[in-house]
Amino acid sequence: MKCAFLCAALAAAGADAAVTLCVSDRPAAPLTFPDHEGQAQYLVRSAVRAAGAEPQFVVLPWRRCIESVKAGQVDGVLGVQAFQAYRDFVRFPLKNGVPDRALSLGVDTWVVVTTADSGVSWDGKALLGANSPVSYPAGVNVVRQALDALAIRNADSAKTALQLMHMLKAERYQAVVIRESDARGFLAQDEFKSLRILAPSFLVSDAYLVFSNEYAQSNPAVVQATWEGIRRIRATREWMELAPSLAK
Image (tube, rainbow, N blue to C red; front, side, top):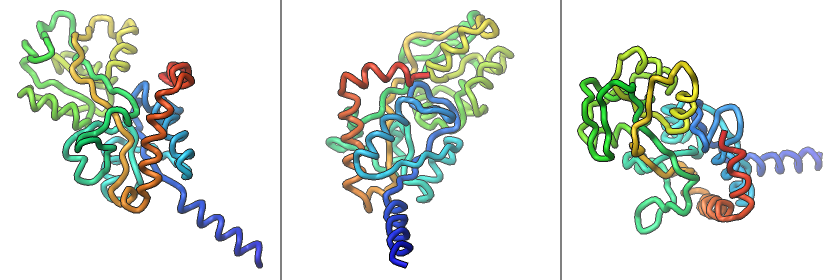
């Protein structure tokens, strides 16, 4: 009887210490992958454990990750950019009221891809020559916000970067915005050699581990220790050596 009571108590304590964190079902190299550990997953797993909790990763479509943390169904999400509307329902690590880059998981880089003869140009301030909307993967609000800010017509009509590349080849669009890591991988294939990446990068954005307001309010010590743990790990020599092996 004593053993049963003690085991139940330990199990309950373990359940309380678990942190459920959402990862996108789309690869976001080098940070997250749905089927293996990327840089962000390694950083978060190590930092959460050092903070005295146990991470449990769940893989969902990106929009469901955001909806789930908003509804309190998961405790946090990996790889979130500082989209203003997210700050209504999740906690970013802040410094002077803005997300603290020193506590980020790394950088997410997006580029414009077009066909070689499209006539589309990008100088970092204006996208010229595009007569059709610019498309990007569905649900990536930070890209939509950047396109809207430049008054560029846009549409998130495909779930994956690969679908967008096929649409570009079929001339359904003149330009798309996808992650640089995806773009370089596609352009290395014969099928997509007619496409090109426009320089400079369209968007370079820090990506964060965010927590739901509810979890952050109930577990402030774990949250802060986890963010600080991410910073400490990224500053080590060991991380510099390990990070490239987790990038793909």
